[in-house]
Image (cartoon, rainbow, N blue to C red; front, side, top):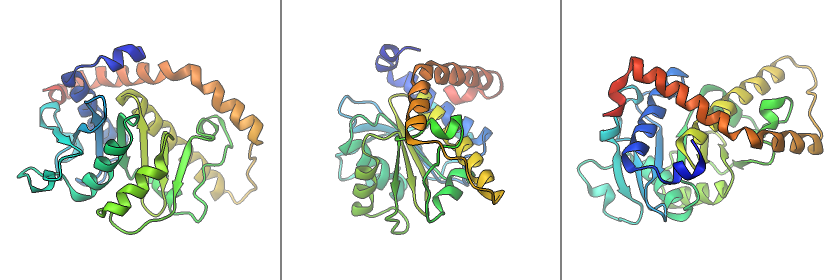
Amino acid sequence: MALTEVQSQSEQELRQDLAAAFRLAVKFGWHESVGNHFSAAVSDDGSKFLMNPKWRHFSEIKASELLLLDANDETVMERDDAPDPSAWCIHGTVHRSNPAARILFHCHPPNATTLATLQDPALKPIDLNTARFFGKVAIDLGFGGMADEVEEGRRIAETLGNKPVLVMGNHGVSVSAASVAEAFEHLYFFERAAETLLKAYATGQPLAIMSDNLAAKTAAEWEPYVGMGYAHFDYLKRELNRTQPDYRV
């Protein structure tokens, strides 16, 4: 799928891609009970967005059940189907303030979350996957508990900025992209990269950290491979179509 095709996606197509991402997050073990949230902007200014309902398990989410929310609507939390307060805090603020963040995934996958618990949660460039994110990761060390306060949401949104990944200290990870497929691929590779770094730390041996020049060169060499993420996501959706076709309805 080309970028122009992504930009011309209908709301229904976006709903189906987002619903697929929830189901696939379960497949990869990135979900956590009935919490965590993925969202996708449907308006040009990003303020109107889709997000999963409060306390719905990722494995049961269907395209038609995604909430359509307006980040500028101050009465959202008064709705009968109001979203989770922490989700509204993070996703509402990001979509309201950053139109470029079309897609936002926030979750607590095991390795990325473990990385976020370290005093230094930086993703060191020690292989292809870790170097993929060189210069593309923001780090927020201002954890203030459950993200349900206005200031918490604003700080998270400002720290993320235009980076595709935000490591949230003592919390988890958020990824942002122009499409669901790209966001999914960011999360897929970041979780693998975190696992590699943690295993390297566990050996107790010194890390072979790339120079900044080599890491930047390697990160740039990943750019032409953006289509790989679409191919990967399309394959995974074909698998879902065979095994869990109800995600599309």
